Length: 403
Ligand code: AMP
Ligand code: MG
Image (cartoon, rainbow, N blue to C red; front, top):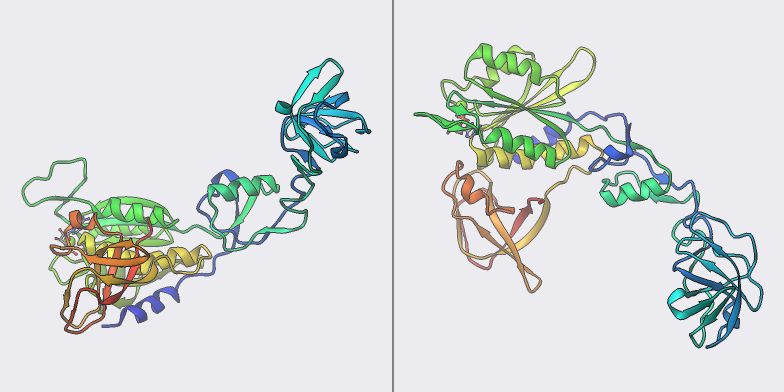
């Protein structure tokens, strides 16, 4: 059996270098920029007023001074005159600062009477309520860099700098097949011997959360023909995830079906708890593209751990990311932990922080099907292989599950 590190290296070596594509700005949230982006404009594009008020010459201002109002400039208009000593131009927020003016008195500090305005403040510093051209960003300047994950904030910036078609790394298509004769859809009431399919929705949601275009292909019964049909459509995706059917049971047919479809096994089983039966292989399509295929153990907790450890790095790398989605950190054990066995363990745990110190509590986990306990987890506590007692207070490695 190979180690977690070897398994990850084997998997990541199969991720293709996807060619960047373009997507519409409105579809770009969550995608990763494939190029540095320069601005095609200065921002602001002209000296502008930050308030509704009167553009003035700061040296003119003292309490009670009366200035002749030459014109009014709305946002979207341009001034036709210059401010001269003893005059002012009325401006709205966002309107260009008229030539000659060097400050704007807020309307609240003035009284208007026909063609004149009386100022009610003692003085004003030059540049008050003015934002000069290119203060925020300059034309030609690199504003966002390759590798940036686009959030709504970046969408706003990209709109401002004229990037309506966004160069992004490709987004992998991920398909999920949940195998098992015992499975019924979550909308059904399980009959004797049946359970609801929780892996399908869980894995699809994980795929989406980490940026893949994820789709569930539903439940596959443990039958060679039925699984074969599903695998055929699953191989149209870039990443195919099957849950269940990869252990040593009589009806664990997934490796055989994948083999029938020409999926080349890279490894089966690794030193990991939970997740030992993990199967990984690749399907090389005639047209040159490749599907990475994961057979995850059926237990939801094992499925989750395997997805977090091995599938999230693939999705990240596929999209031009670093391949690291889980943040590695150190935390003090809240309670003692007895590690047993020859497999490294990634135990669902709760990570908290108090007065700047991180604490981790391995959850009172009742086996790898215990999803309820899992709902309290926001991290995986790591314990290397070997029989060892970790006392409370000991510092251990923890992987944070991003929320
Ligand atoms: P398997 O890997 O197929 O032997 O399944 C291991 C365990 O996980 C069995 O108890 C299954 O009933 C359970 N299991 C398999 N698939 C699912 C699923 N999609 N949702 C919930 N539990 C599952
Ligand atoms: Mg099964």
